[in-house]
Image 1 (cartoon, rainbow, N blue to C red):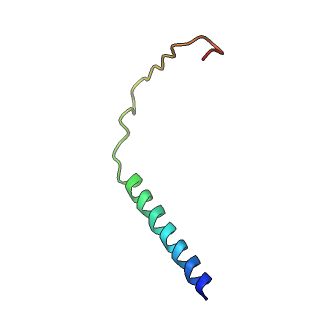
Image 2: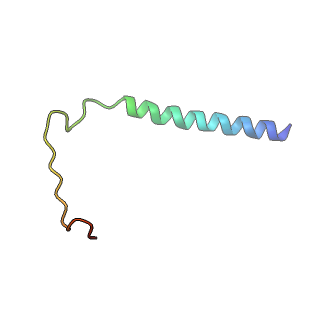
Image 3: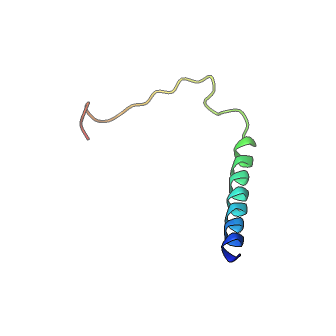
Length: 49
C-alpha cells in the first residue's frame, strides 16, 4: 500500500510540474524575432574548435 501512495504522489507531482511549465509557455506573447533576419557569425574555421 505504501508503494501505491508513493507512486500516486510522484505522478501528481510530475503532473503539477508539467502543467505549471506548460502554462508559462502558453502565456508568452508573439516571438521577439518574428519577421526579422538573424545572422549567426562563428569565429572559427570549418572543422576547428
